[in-house]
Length: 278
Image (tube, rainbow, N blue to C red; front, side, top):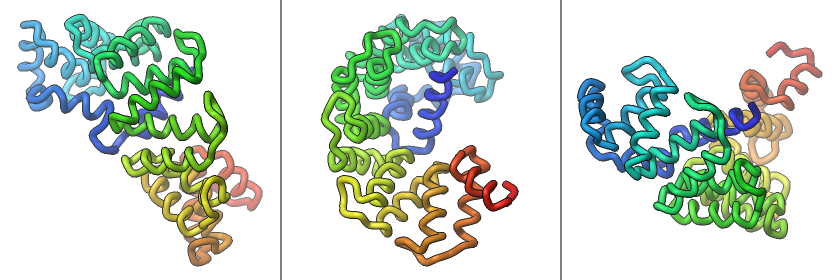
């Protein structure tokens, strides 16, 4: 269940970002994304891997067809069997989360590795996560960081975020807030909301960067605009205290309520302590 929540969080973080990683892999299948279901079905029956992959995405997401994860997984498996790295990555996701197939961390890690070695950027990031968390592989922070860096070199948006997090938390490398900030900035500029939030937090606390509440507020705002609840809550605090922004109790309350409704526990606790219904 925990891994499923992590995978869902990653999907949310990547939604709406620049065409990197997962989004870029879809664009690689030039022409298939514009085909209707009947045409894709015919092409898939003819053995076209790109059509199988695109059709798998449609069944996975319920676009134009009922959402059917077993059918999606089967199509990804057929396309992966023809060597399509994007399909391997999607099939690995299915094995990692148990979507349409029995959960199998080792199978997932093996597929991520094969796709990563073929140059698929999101697979590099996911292989890094397998090493970091010990999913189907021995836990190895150095290997995780290696694969995150390789994904980041290809501008895979979440890879740079993970490199930053490894530096911030001292996993596989000495703790280095300045280096974490550098990677968070790179990922944030690519559209990753979690990276935006962490960069704002470093500015807010003066960790690895000169303390600058105005900069913190700007990065919190960017993350909040991508529905990052933690960023909403911290931005609310800045508005309450007038740090880096003019004091604005109404805006602070609006942000705090939004954060609570999106599940932020700190926001809930603050509102509950003030007897404010959310």
